[in-house]
Length: 114
Length: 107
Image (tube, rainbow over all chains, first blue to last red; front, side, top):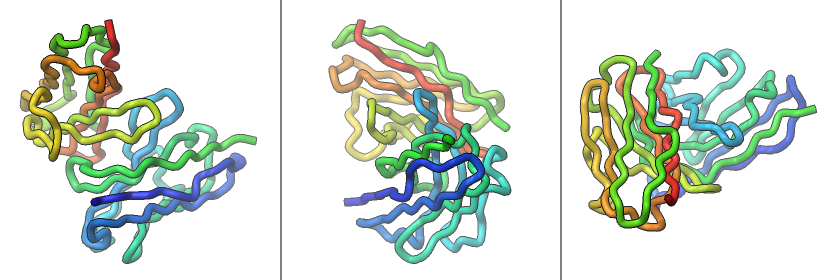
């Protein structure tokens, strides 16, 4: 069974940093295209970032470019978030796929507030 | 960037009836559209990809159609577990984009 489990969320002050992790099981994460997608409270879905299986290609939404960095190792996917803003407050999901996103984690909540 | 517009924002339907949800892309995305279902407190679940192919274990009452800029998700004979929010998603161009969602509620 494919499973994705995010961790690392929490309360952080504006301007602070946080690192999210996503652990995968039931499939070979290292050979999969992976994404981060977020959802602000009561709002819709927003794609945040993508990384290719080889890690050679990464893409970012304009709203996070220059502040967030996606990376991976053999077993996990990461999102380093710097210079956090109030508008980054959201549930962050990791999701597998290069086109459609066929599996999603349960999400981790990031709250940016003083 | 491609903008995905869903309508209506809310759809009130009685159990057993049909629900028809629409999604429009600001430019052609060919058939590179997916649909997801999201229930409160849960992650989205893939329903349809390639505009019309049901994902694994998705019941046959869910069907997708369309290409280019106009897409439809149809749910026949709505069951109680189908009341949720539905999102369309284009993956033809970077960046990927989601529609704003349609909430299907009990009438």
